[in-house]
Length: 113
Length: 114
Image 1: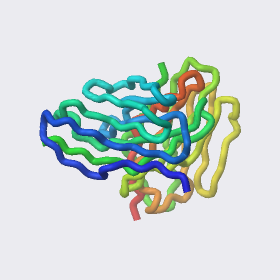
Image 2: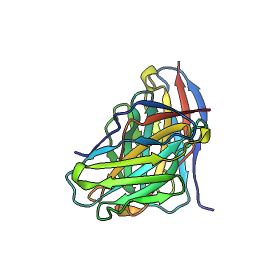
Image 3: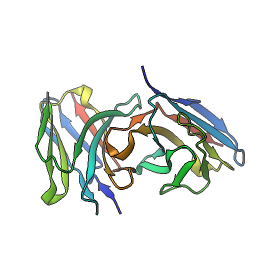
């Protein structure tokens, strides 16, 4: 069965370190998204991609970057982790043109100390 | 710009009561899609429904029903005869055809009390 997986599920890192969260989907979806979930803010869009070599900034992109070298993967990098980036991160994928629902990974809980 | 507002931050009802979760959206696109997702205490996001802007028919699935009204830009979700297992955070979301971004509301935390 097709799926979308995130790794790691939990991570603790120190302020200033570079961190990469992995997202891998086997749906063959063109669209992929990264969100962060914080109490009182719901799910906020960090970055998204419509296909290979395409990346776009969402509403809370500062301090984050993504790259899309193939259809299956959209890794999220925190260039210099800050305590404000402590959050739960969700990756999602969807078919193009809003035809389908978004499929979500199980989330990565990141703690920056 | 697209926007989703879920004015109810938290709701508590006693089991077997009906409860409606409100969702109001803003969009400039004529073709768009609306979604509801459930996030139970385990944390995963569970898809419940997708609606496109051309289909204003209400939908019922078991104890769940959705009322889509373009005139008021609302897409409300009703749970009939609520159960403790319905306790979760519920998110309403919007995607515009022109750019496929999925924007979420802040969610409504629903407590069903036994």
